[in-house]
Length: 396
Image (cartoon, rainbow, N blue to C red; front, top):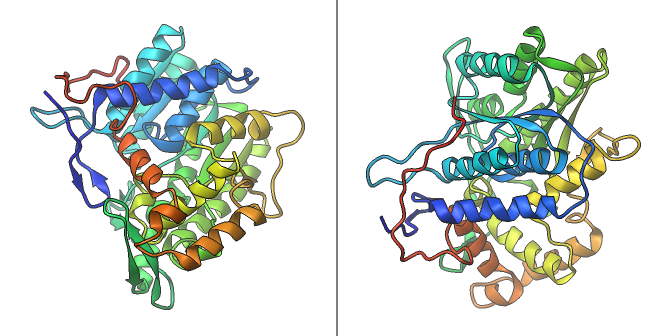
């Protein structure tokens, strides 16, 4: 079939298999062109099919020569409906890893469930023995608690007060005001249950109990802080409260793992175009302004550049892992440079629909959004007939 992008708000409901494969290959080639990393040998990535999770898996495999297990919730093609982008990404990764002689396995299902944890542990025990790195990179709007059965839904809202600021429709370029009412106590509780650290803790507990977590193992989860512009809706809102819980979990896990020489970190990463960030009011406009400034200064990074720097310079670099006063790894350090933020803030004050393409890289943002789904990728003929039914080689 001929596959074209179909959008509904901040979601693209179609994905292109060849475009996704090309994007994955580009990331692989980037890593292969960099110095090898003396890093992990057997890696579990929970949330492995897109964004930072996918980039982590690529860096582990092609930067460190690691065998990998990827856990993710994606769907295969069905009739005229394409597979999700994460499905196509994972198929491309698995094929490339196999060609490179690396072991790689995929488990598709609900990472929050006891069933998927048990299935993953059995696979690790059978195929790899033990793992020495666990990357936790789950982004989900809902979670069913595996013990109580309660279904939690997350919201993106401020706390305490109504929030109003500029936002943009990145499809049309229209700059407008977004007003968001504050979250209720129950919405806050549910958001923390979905996006906080409880499930990460459950994964590590189960892996340890089963004896498949190696001595000296590392685990890392991802977070974001960002500038004052986005704080009310992000860092000081419901998501920020969930990230605070995630960071507190890292502290507990660090103590738990250190008894066997292990360690746990939260890495604070740069703002990037993702399916999740596209859903947050204000954030797409901020990212567009940030991209323009960072590209002009030669400091722009995507997911793969960020993750290569995380692995090579921080997690597995020479000497101790550098952290800030809160124990966080800061790979957002280039984004948060004062000279970068000052220029973004200056542009923000002036932003209107009339000058948005002049003062920001909104076109770059829009293009990168579609590339998440395999579209607008150089070298792909989008008028050609392609097979939407793609198999994942090592799906378990």
